[in-house]
Length: 472
Image (tube, rainbow, N blue to C red; front, side, top):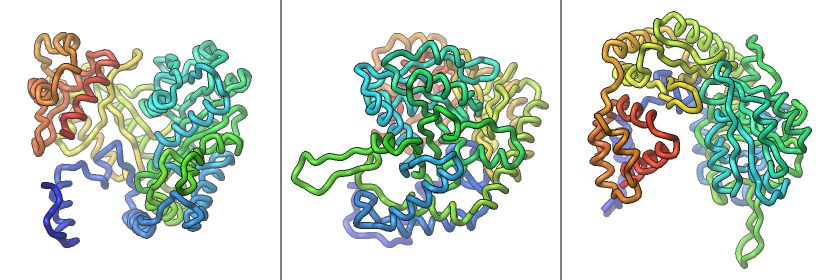
């Protein structure tokens, strides 16, 4: 039984939480180079936590019952609009929800019988998720394999009478590259199609990098043809998770994102987001973070982040066998190995206390490792480069992971739906992945090598089964 017979004290619960999280990656310090964003300023995170807690029990379902959420959202959304060319916005739970609302608004406004959206292969999977939920076809187009920017001609040729949305990234997550937003938005405008810029990563980063001296091209709602843009505040805004904004150039498009229902005898249903009841905690945390840092704080973080990214790229260029992919226009850096297996390198770095995010090969882009450079990275960039160099040398000596003979072919021929979770767990154990509770972090090089050898559809099926097993 998971529910205790009697209530437990707060001290007891916090001790239990400490035990449960002892194997988690650290969220502070910069040694985890994805998933978390750290300013390196504890007082800012403390302000965010207190703001979050103060609004924890407030329900965003009804803004007339809690007028505080209206004022706070206006301030937060207004700050984003001031930075990104104006517009009319909605505070959401994250980039996926912001993108979901942008796709919904574009679909409903265009009202095409067989709606489709056109995007580069480097666009975030949140667009595929939104399209899946909303009944929209995805038309993915290639990117230039030197610059990793979207192929503008391919986008243009993919638009037809049923296209409801064209997508550009600023930047795309995999290689940190900013797509040619002006060209893409111009193509969309001439075709009479909405254009969304996914700036979930870059919306609250690129303007500060520009102030720090980086060459950042126009990418926001000031660009003719851009009709909506998403910006996550829980990334380079450094707010607690659950904070994003989607802006629309036209207030009528924002209304298309809303949902209302009067087809029942209960309370009034009008939702600005996918969720109905939701805590105002993330809003309070985001508001407090913006207020605690202010413009000067973000300018300084932009300078530190830009310097750290430049030093990281230069340092990687000096490590034999490694190559940075493209010329990142942000502080997201991806590098691949020429004579070094990057999956083995990632395991070696993990053994040394650093998490580098593996990215599988796709659409001609090689397998690589991803680093998100944040405000805290500058203090540890030399230590990171030392670990990467040591890990690369170790990986070179170890060679690629040993994938059991015939395993890829076996998996390719399996009917995964016919396997129960226990049998799938046995299959995972055959490559050294113990999915039992408390088994600890396995070396992932073999797993990533196997996934890398499989087509995308089969990768997806394997990942779904993995998730099913670990929650069984």
